[in-house]
Image 1 (cartoon, one colour):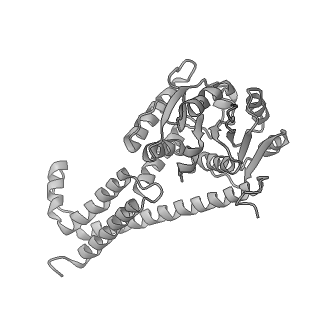
Image 2 (cartoon, each protein chain N blue to C red):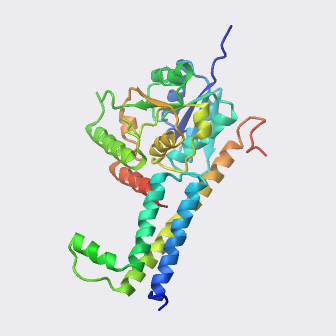
Image 3 (cartoon, each protein chain N blue to C red):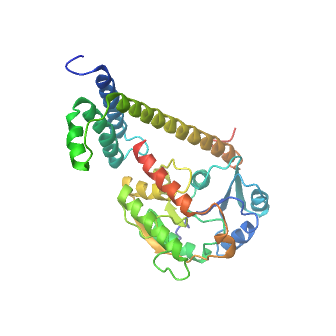
Length: 230
Length: 122
């Protein structure tokens, strides 16, 4: 008897990625994942127009810039409406390798996991030193505040089962979203595992000002603490 | 003075009790984001504030532990507490506004989804 193939949706949050978004989409499609949702977070460039021009891509746009967490949430909500069985979140700056998508979704499809977290820190080769340190600090505070130890709490490359996207409730709008998901995994007792991913640190992706800088890291930490006491 | 307590002590104790009650109620109702850790932090912050104001001698123990001599002037303490409360409420209000804006932006974005069972489509 033929088993039904799960409907996998790739959610790409994007902010001012017009230069590269078409390449990112094409690469994902070449790896056999045609269901792609691009959420443009109020970009000032032509990110939305370029994503919308690619056949088969669902392009959505926030009229105002709302941050990484809010953008991923919009993409996940869209995937729910489109009846996704598995949702993969994938950064729009080309740093993730679409070749890793299969490795992220197979524990969900084959072994019944709810969430698979892509981790850059199982193999740190090629990763800038300051990013390794920043990640470890993020991991420590995520463990300290939310009680789960993971090796890459800030990774944007993750896969979720239908059950997980139905259960996970987040309100974080910016980068603290990544840690909030970890908290939800614990709180909602979701079965999770980590899977190694490759990251391509290009001049383009490293040059993006809105990524996790030291100051943004402090803001993220502040928001994590604030969400605890408010 | 009522029951040996000054008016400001009663006011702050009531406020602390309300905040502690809200925290416990939110946790009991399992509202979004209400974790045990969050409840514990709330109990420590607001419960501690209530305990200090009702039993000021606790501050002597605290002062002894951290090595600061002398008591805290009640007026300054009340002022700080009021400012703390105002900032706390202001930040909460901003946070809620931000979330509402995001929700509206999301609803607007999802309207364009070409799907019949899309609840955001009008």
